[in-house]
Image (cartoon, rainbow, N blue to C red; front, side, top):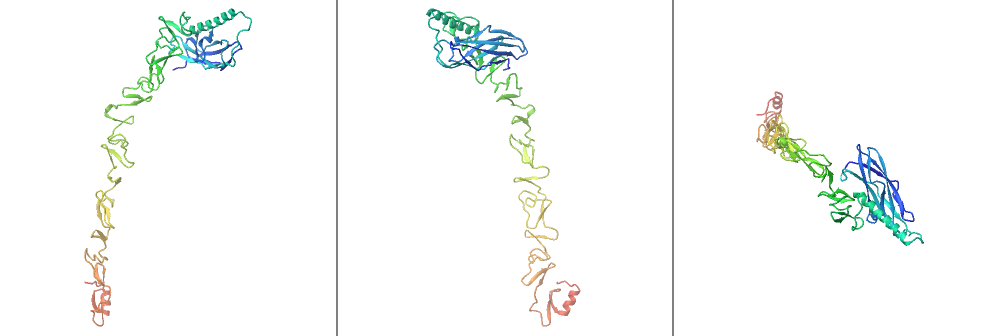
Length: 401
C-alpha cells in the first residue's frame, strides 16, 4: 500500500492533571503529489473507553501536497478511575478512498498514576452531575462524529450507532464499517472503522488478494505474470515452453542436447561428456567404457572394444594388441625368439637342459662327455672338434647347424 500520510507526535505518554484532564497533538503531513481530504479518527485500546477522547476542531480537512495539519486530542478521565496505562492512536484516511489510502500514527499512552480526584467539596451535587454528564455526552458525540458525522441516536449503548433500526459498532461491524452501509468485502474485516484485508492478503485494485499466488498481482500489486507463467511464492514461474522445449527448473531446455538435462530434467552429463540424442556420450571418437571415456584404438585395457586387455608387454595399436618391434607373440606373451629358451627361433621350440638359446638356436652351455680325447664341444658349430679347428671355425664366423 502506498504511503499517503506521515503522522508524528512529540509525546509517547500523557500525564494527566489531578482532575483527569490532558491533551496531545499529532502532526499529519500529506506525502503524496495530490490534494487529499483527510479524515481523522481515534482508535482506543480496550482498556480506554472511547468517550474519554475527543478531537478538537474539524475531523475533515483539505490537505494540498506537502501540507501539514495539527490534530489535537483532548482526554478527560472520569473521577475515581483506577491507576494504570491506557493507549490510543490516531488514524487519518483519504475520505474518498478510506479503505485503500490511510495511515495510523504511533500509540500514545495515557498514564493514570493515581485515582482521579473528585470535584472539590462544597460544590452542589447537581452541578457536579451536570458537569460530568456534559463531558461524557460531549466525548461520545465527538467520538461518533469522527466515524459518520452524526451523534448517536437515543436508545443505543455508548459507542454504538443506529443503522437501519439496529444498534451497531461502526468500529468493527463489517456491514456498517465507519458509516452506516459501509460494507466490507468478502476477504475484509472492519478494524477501527476501516475495511482492511484479512491477514495474509493485500488490497490491490479494491480487492483483497494473495501476493503469494495471484497471477495478476504476483509479489506486488499490478505485477502480472505472462500466459506461460504462474505465481508461486510471490514469483512468476514459467509453467510451459513454446516451440516444444522441456521445462526444467523454471527454464526451457532441449533435453536432446542439454548436458545438464540430458534425456530428462536433472540428468547431468560428466565434465568430459556431451549430450547427443538425449544420451550422455563421449566427445569425438572416444568411447564410454565403465565411467570413463577412452580411445579404444590405443588403450591397453580396452583395445578395440571395452574390456579387451592386451597381454604382458603388448601395446594397443589401431585397436589391436601387438608386440613391440623385435618381439613375437607366443602363448599370449611377447618374447624374443633369439634368446627365449622356451621359444627359441620359433614359438614352442624349447631348449633342453644344458642348452641356451643363442641367436635363435639351442647351444650347449658346457662340454659334452661324448667328445673324444683331444676334442671340445665347439660353441660355433655345436659339434665336437679339436680345439684349434674350433677356433678356426669360430674365426670364420661359422654358425651352428
